[in-house]
Length: 572
Image 1: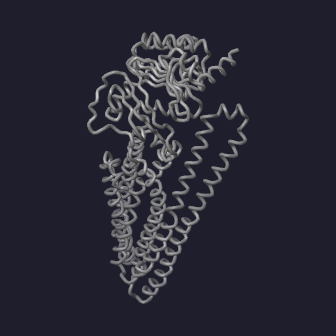
Image 2 (image 1 turned 90 degrees about the vertical axis):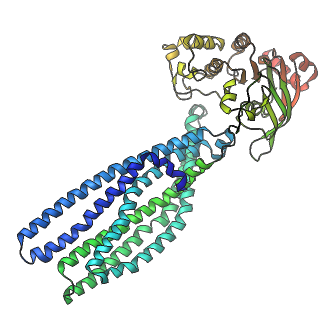
């Protein structure tokens, strides 16, 4: 696990090395001061030597200031290393997730990935900051203070030799019981994030259907479950500090008892006992810090396991080892294709279809007939489970993903816009597009007029997800964005469902003119959107029911004719 995460600290290894070095200097200063204090009591005060007291006192002040400097530098370097680690880890996670296929994302869920990028990374970042400082300071001070205490009175140190194994066993038991509870708690965080994410994304629907009370109840349930899971995890962890304090106070009582007896017997000086007690406090503080680290490590381990799961997830759609395929033309062939999502069985079965270069193909079918699943196989958003998909005469798995997807323009069923200006959103299709090309694409998509109606035109700021434009406007902007890409293959997945029939007709006419020579696939619910296609594919329950022209299907295919008749009745 740590091997997978160490590379994210490499950029800041200088600070990761300097931090413990500063801690070592700080601890050496702190553990030397009690010896000087013992000398002041046993020599300077006993002999009434004021000069000796002042010289050692001045040396103690200097050492305290040096210790302060080392501590401040350790804090600065530790913060840089920890924050840098968190920054690089977030970047690495985001890069990894950006390379995920749809199937990989489906496996984790977007809410869980958000939790891992935020809560889990923050926990790991804090653990690194604490680890570089406290995880070095506590053991080093424990060893150094124990050595100094042993040098003063080795018989009293035996108290710790009894106490430390008891503490170690107790902490091991707590760790074993706590780890699975923290893993369960983090899953509750995922559920809470999912509830918040879904509510905010669908806030308009929530308000329209007056479902705020239901959403509040759902959030409250997720929040209560998170609280319950957190309490369940903390119940065991809360034993950590009482066990620590029991050991600490037991050690203090034992040392005061035996040390006082030695002073009375004359085998130990008063200054030695004072310095020994100082070392006791340093040792006990070290043990308390170790307990704090232990708590952090238990929490960090749960987060790190989840982070490493993301980093080590095998991306199931990648470039082939030798991706030298070059597209000969814009033809598409489905050769006995089957496809399924995970273990749910195939949703597409034995699809055989050939689409010629420059041909316009319409796809019609009922809800759940797997129309979208079919076209998502062309740019390899998913991979087939059987058969093969050929683009330009080559299996899509022989192309580099970037090369394949550059040739395919796709307007997805769920239209997505990003925060920023309309112009910036359009340039997702072509970042180097000129203003003339942008206007031409928008005119073809019937978007130019409504854009110019905004006070700032193409510089109008869109809210996150395009919340300040209507559904039909959003669809037209997404079509314009795809047109700017100037693809060889364009897929329009129900992309005009939110526009009126007149606008739909204008868009289709503009596409016919502007996409000559481009292979075009149009998924639609309205037959009027595909009736003038070169051929129409009728999908039914994951299989091709029929292929033909509008006239042929009206005459020979009952499914197509039933859809057509129902829509014509609606028009009448």
